[in-house]
Image (cartoon, rainbow, N blue to C red; front, side, top):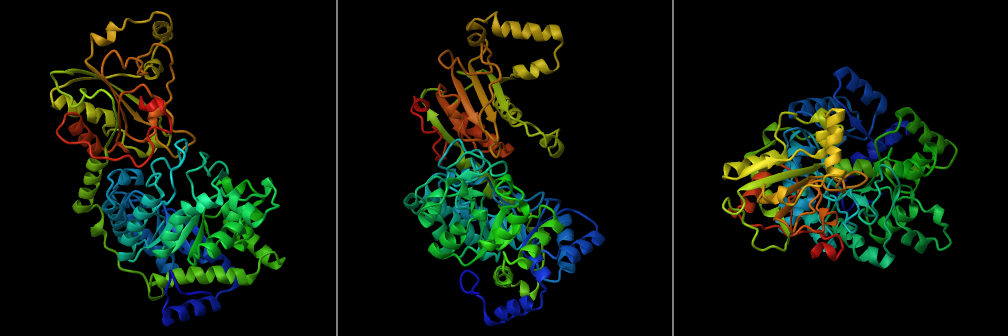
Length: 578
């Protein structure tokens, strides 16, 4: 085992690693290979879980800071070996606990065009994660957004410039290291080429070897040289390198990186020289589980070079699959020892051989951290397309009467976790405009009108839409300006606007030459593809209340648009620029 970079262990730490490994049974070693999902449970259950599962690390469900601290202290109390404790702090400390500071998704950070905010994203993330007991973050995301159709990382990358992705990712990493938090960047060999979600299917990175090395390889090499401790492996195939190392490989033999010795042992370990911890992305995602039987998946992933599994499918089954593979000779105990040694080295690198750091909840949600989030919001909002130069700034003299329409795709889980009494993003914009003297009407989308309508009312509404067309003057005489706002999240199968009604409805901005129309996205930056006719288009990157207030300030000329799009918001099309 190489205890050098990124772990750089001293003699005392090396002795701890080797003695700890020596005193573990085979089954205890196997249990160290897993990171479990920790849910809020009683002390007796935590004690039982730790004693029976004996896992190497955990990631927990977000809760209030004091509850996270209490839960993690219980896990620490009963664990025989110190735990890797990780949080998904991709956008800030909100990934560590409720009340943590959301600085912004990576695309929003990159839109500031200032690497300072990538550092601040890492600093606040690490500070708040560490405050509740974490020693590791599953961030930054170092994927490159090369395909606007990809909804999984639409807002979760630093953009499509690989050098900027590397620079901003290293700034995030630098902040983590200053606070003694380990970083696991993701998702090797790189998302952003395909448009499929690995939760649901395999995806492919289709680049040639030469192009991959120049872009994704450059990013990973930069992170490795900067000392990143871990790399999370995506369920993503990379056919060019499979073919390079195995010229006669059949197409149906390509495996996602989590099951490919070519991509882990040869490309990541040998070519790129990574000596740190290799962790799979969630091992119950279909991009992995669909490729072979579970009893083969678990030992194969370890055999080909992965050191840890993110989550069990079933604890008893998964442990047995590894034990069976050792007994039948398909997986060697030497390979398990190598993986566990690297896990222990990761822990010793963090000083866990001497115990855990003290916790201080006073660092959660600091005013200085919130100030950073406000600065990012102000500097990120991007005026992407501006063809009618006289539209902005909005004044009550020119545009006294405004119609505001909104387009949303709701997540069914949001109804359980969202405060139903909180203001919607479009309501905040409307209220801010009203306060500045505008008259604003919020339009009720046709589908919303139909929900509570009687049968006769439905017929009447549909008849007006499909047969009795309204005169253009019914819009132009009533309004001076129309604003469309879209909150369509990525991280799903698609991120497209669903215009449910395609004829006549005011829901669709067909009237861009009749009166001024603004289109504002508060989530995905790629909506121009669906509304290429729009002449003034703005990306806000999120729907936070303070982001909406900064937006209105810019609309009325009290603040300038400062954002620079880190992605191709025109979606590779010429007509979206017209």
